[in-house]
Length: 468
Image (cartoon, rainbow, N blue to C red):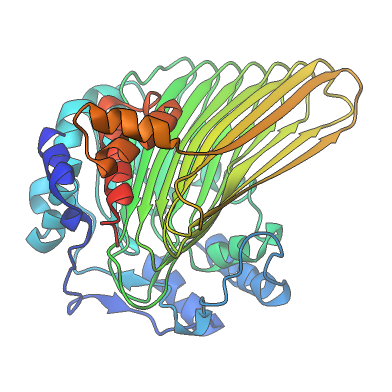
């Protein structure tokens, strides 16, 4: 990852390159039964998935846009292309990926990361996976890591059918229904009982086509007593028309299993990021969410944990950076549905140049979840006097035998601190960037080193106003 870090230190151009789409195949703009049929045919869906897509479309057309979150008036589904196929099929070896697409991911450091610090990598370009691979020693442990479309037609088809969009049903909200109708690409992971995957797996998603949407589906099942760290990265170049990301992540954490799910989302500022992520944790299991949210014009992003078994645990650590023209509505939801469960939420949000950052937390403790504990801590930093930061906590506690706490702090960068750092030889921009990086340290210290370096570089670039 050293070369990628050096490029990040210089400028932002590595994220802004374009790919000439002249050989790509696209469906028409809009969302109709014919378009959904077309996507299903492209994907060679089994009959149950074909029917699921059409049913999801019916639901989409019946339900309204959610009332929570910032307005999305600039998003017109009649002008969004829901499927773009690049000029390649999925490859199992990096050398076989077409040069024009390979160049995109090489400039993002993906193959180097795979060589140095990952157990496997999946790379998606627009609506299709272009590369997927897992190291032999990991596969020999029985770990399955492959494109979910291939998995649907393979030996794990019944497992996927049993779990697909059960945590996030299409009826959940309009964008979940949209996802169910037009989803494309994504990964399937299965970790057998007792298996510990010592180094992370990663999927990287690149949306490169202007005016398009990306709708990948990630399904991860970590069986009893197993361990996995899964990393997800996202980026897109900036265009002058709206792009849409409405992916879905479903995590199943078995008895006494642990899943750490880390995300660095670096979408461009014409992106509407309407993503849904949800985990179900069984007895003694643990899910850890690590989230860095940058870029995008508007975000709705609220990972949710359902603590379904006794002693299940959830931890969420997140940072959000909202700059000029950004309205980022992020947060976390936890449902305590069993006794002796625990959750901890620790977030940081940063607003600059008129950016709006809103943190929403929802903690639900069911009446049978006696002995449960939850602590929510959110801190907001406004870099100037034209930005905005809001905290909206919600708590629904249905038993008196629970220990629940919430704290929130909102502040500004101290002029005295900036002056002190400048007296030590830093410029004003460098001083402010250093303060913000320290403020976001709760997330960066939880990431593998190379991803922490990338996140801190993104913060510095945001503070300089050089990210478009």
